[in-house]
Length: 300
Image 1 (cartoon, helix red, strand yellow):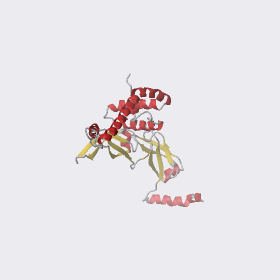
Image 2: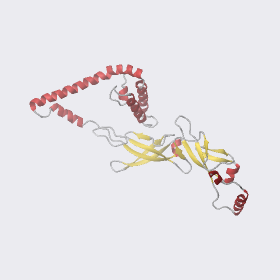
Image 3: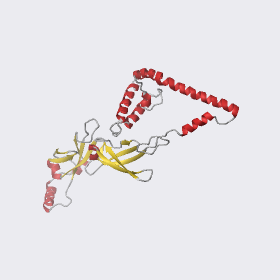
Image 4: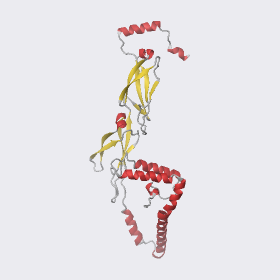
């Protein structure tokens, strides 16, 4: 059986990590290697499975204790041996300096030079991209142009997964700054900004829209058509509805990430004609004469 170092998979140094540290490390690694974000990296799916497997074992105290016994046999003893060797090296250095002053140990000099040539991963690059609500809802390929280190513009194609949340980041592996001494390139992290438009405003998984009706529709009640993402529906407006009231339409909002959708919330706004016709003015005058309704009485 092949032994898997679950602590290494979660990017933890050893088995002394606290439950909270294990949980935090799991979230970071799961987000980093999620297959929906790393669509161009076939390795990420297998790595994501290992990450989930590691967290399932280490987050359970019973299975963690059982695994730690295996880990100590396979990894822990090796680490202790390496640490003891490093300590012996430091003792030797002190002994050497006792006889030869502050002259540099040749072995340490070679080791330092070797460390100077250790491969170093390049820095990640952060940027942002604006998308519409419908682009984020359905998913879409977007192009983004950035200035590379050599001063030239480079264009990337970003695959926006359907239902991505506002503020989430997409990682393009190896598209960041160059590594040093043969190290891997950094990654390009693209933050998604979902922008509200004239039709919808996104709040969490709910969509908000204005529902504009006439005074007589509000007074008499009516049925109006409302555009939702993907279809047009008909909505019953009850008699006597007022401006500021909200009509909630379940299942017509944004994707919730679990196969469902939030609500579409229609904000009622009663509108009057800015330039009424002569006939409309006559009706308004007549209504003013015969109506006893005074909304200001409700303020008392």
